[in-house]
Length: 219
Image (cartoon, rainbow, N blue to C red; front, top):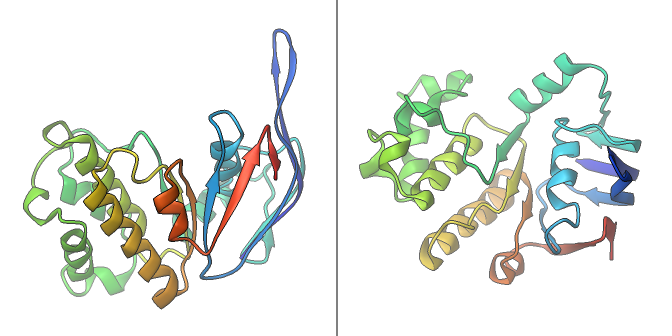
């Protein structure tokens, strides 16, 4: 599903080049749930952005679903994210003038969801304990509720892969456990590949394996 070969990412600053990722190699299989851990600044979020085609590597090669990513073709990368990847970001990225329900159904394209009145979306929101909040706007939600809306939006429309950057960081323990259990079930039952950046060892323990980044290298 994901093949990363000798990926390095550098940024140019006033004081010189900063290496965020250094010669990273990683393989993730279909249906595998992998936790990515490490200190702040170790390159975790950068790695997710490279896989999603949001950030290009300085060198190396990334393959998703058997296709090598060409970072010079923005249209292809956009279609990759639209059709295959659900991305859960730390900042939620909700549209302020849309309700929670409208934010979730916005990316839905498949007839499978629309044909039954978005019943699958309703079931997903129910699992995330958001049924009674669907008509509220983002400024009427707590941070944990905003994150659950963002998670629901990432999971709709039959995505093949979920990239999650601290998806449970703003949640209480019970909500975090329910969310990770939902992701675990999706990986097992639907073969969705899931990468989770987390600082929470309890979240990481529910994954198939843990990948640790230190100073831009896998250790």
